[in-house]
Amino acid sequence: MKLVNLKDAQQQVSFTEAVKIGLGRNQGVFFPESFQPLADVDALLDKPFAERSTEILYHLIGDELPKDTLSEMVQRAFNFPAKLVAVDDTHYCLELFHGPTLAFKDFGGRFMAECISLFNQGERVTILTATSGDTGAAVAHAFYNKPNVDVVILYPEGKISLAQQKLFTTLGGNIHCYAVKGSFDDCQAMVKSAFLDDELKQTLGLNSANSINISRLVAQVCYYFEAVAQLPKEKRGKVHVSVPSGNFGNVCAAMIAAALGLPVAKLSATTNQNDTVPRYLDSGEWAPNATLESLSNAMDVSKPNNWPRVETMLERGDFNKHDFYSRSVDEDVTQSVMKQLHEQGYLAEPHTAIAYQGLVQDMDADACGVFLATAHPAKFKESVEAVLNHQLDMPKVLTDALLKPCLAEPLQADYESLKQAVMNKIS
Ligand SMILES: *Cc1c(COP(=O)(O)O)cnc(C)c1O
Image (cartoon, rainbow, N blue to C red):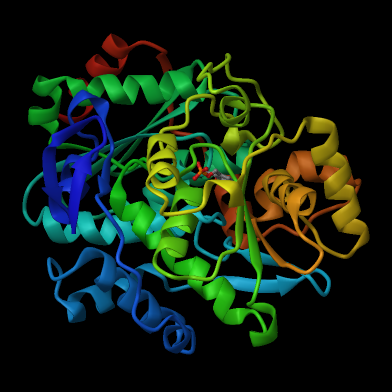
C-alpha cells in the first residue's frame, strides 16, 4: 500500500510506516493515492466475514503482510459479529457494538493493536490517544497487558458517560488515563502537539491510536461489506448508508468500501449540533465553532481529523459528490427519534438515532437504507433511560467496570502539563 501525506505530497510511506508514524509532517494525514476496485464483489459477498475481510484487507494493504498472517490477525481482531437487524422492510440497522467495549471502535482498535504488535516487535512503544468517549475503551482493551506497550489516554473530564469512562480508567497496568480539564478538541490538540515534539516522540516511541491511524480505517471498511452481505439479495440494488459522524473516520471507511466496488448508492454523514462539515458544504467556509456538549458525546468534535481524507475522495471522484449528504441533527430531534424508534421496537442510543434521522431525511422511496448503531444503548444508560423512561438491562462488562475505582489522574488542558505527566510516568 502506498500512501501520501495529504499536506505534503513529498512524504510517501508504506502501510507499515503509516501505521507506525500515525500522523505525517505538517500534521498531515496519510492516504492512498488511489483505490483499485475489487475483482468480484458478488463472490466476495458470499464468503464468511473473516475470510472476506482478509481478502479486502489483503487487496488494500498488498503484500506487505503475508496473507496467512493477515488472516490470523483478522480472526483475532474480529472475534465478534457485526449484526444487521431489520427495523422494518426498508430500514436496517448495522449493530457494531457486539465487541468487548460495546462500540464500533473495537473493530479498528483491535486490528490496530494486531498491526502495532507485529510491526514493533521488541521495540518499546507508547500509544497516545485522545478520546471523545469510545476510542479510549477500545484501544485500552485492545492493548491491555501487551508487552512493550504503554497506553496514554486523554479524555475531557465530565464530558463522557460514566460507563464510557469506567471501561478504560479502571484497567490500570499499562493503561494510563488523564482527565483533561477541557474539551475533546483540546485533548486532540494536545496529542497533535506531542507528535510535533521530537524529544518526546523519540523517548517514548510515540504512536497514536486515533482514527488518523490508517490501520483503524482499513479495518472499518470490512463491516460495510458485511452489512450488504447480510441484506437480502433483492435489496442490494440501491443501498443508502448512514453513518453518525464526529471525526469522520467511519464515513471515510464507508467511502473506501464504495471505491472498492461495494454497491453504495448514497452515503450520509450526519453530525450532532457540532456541524462544521454541514456548514462547510453549504457555505464553502471552514469555520469550526467551540465544541458543544451533546447527548451523542462521541461526536462532540468541531475539527474532524478525517475530513481531509473524505474531501480528497470527493474531489478525486472516488465517490460522487452529489450522492454524499452531511446534515446536522439537533438535540430535540435526537430525542424524538430515539422515542420513535423505541415505539417501533428498536432501542437506540443517541448516536444511532442520529444515523437513522440522517438516513430518512435523504433516502429515496425505492432505496434500502442501512444506518449504523455505533454503540450499545447501555453505554449511554443515563441519557437513554431519561429520554425513553425505560429501564435498561446492563451487560456484564459494564456492571463489572462500574464497580471498580477510576484510576485516571487530573490534567490541565495544555501541552506542557501533558509532557511532564507522561515523561514522569513512563520514561
Ligand atoms: C467515535 C464514535 C462516533 C463517530 O465516529 P467518527 O469515525 O469519529 O466519525 C459515532 N458514534 C459513536 C458511538 C462513537 O464512539
